[in-house]
Amino acid sequence: MRLLLMSDTHLPTRAKRLPGRLLDEVPRADVVFHAGDWVDTDTLDLLETRSRRLIGVYGNNDGPGLRARLPETAYAELDGLRFGVIHETGPARGRETRCAARFPALDVLVFGHSHVPWDTTAPTGLRLLNPGSPTDRRRQPQRTYMTATLAGGRLTEVELHPLPPR
Image 1 (spheres, rainbow, N blue to C red):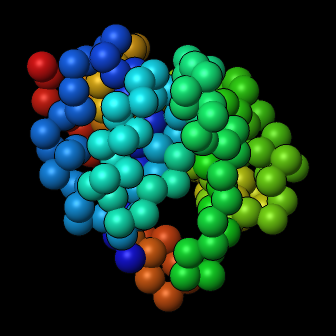
Image 2 (cartoon, rainbow, N blue to C red; image 1 turned 180 degrees about the vertical axis):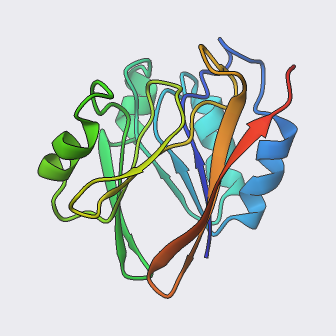
């Protein structure tokens, strides 16, 4: 199963559209995750139309239209792994311990907010993944998104994809 992870698209404030390379990945993915801060409902509509399955949440910059259609936290079981999606997880310091305590039943937590890519594993085994932002690199060298493969109940081939400068 091919997974596509993105967050913090901030359209149309940080970019006019999603990068072409990212859009090309959408129909190839079995599941697309979006960890919030869409900003516009057009991006949600687009991804709902092009995705086989979309799992998304709202973020702190998302208004009433998105909050009416998306949860604050989403959960899904895929190939035996328990996934959660949330926008904010708090400061980087102590993140693994804090998230493991808050989400003890999860195997993987996808999150956003910081625009900083993140791939760590808590002592409990919880995998934390932040794909960064495909439209707003903030203090990062590049804009990014992630892909992963899920097979036999294992998450493999987790890859951070840098996007070229605009």
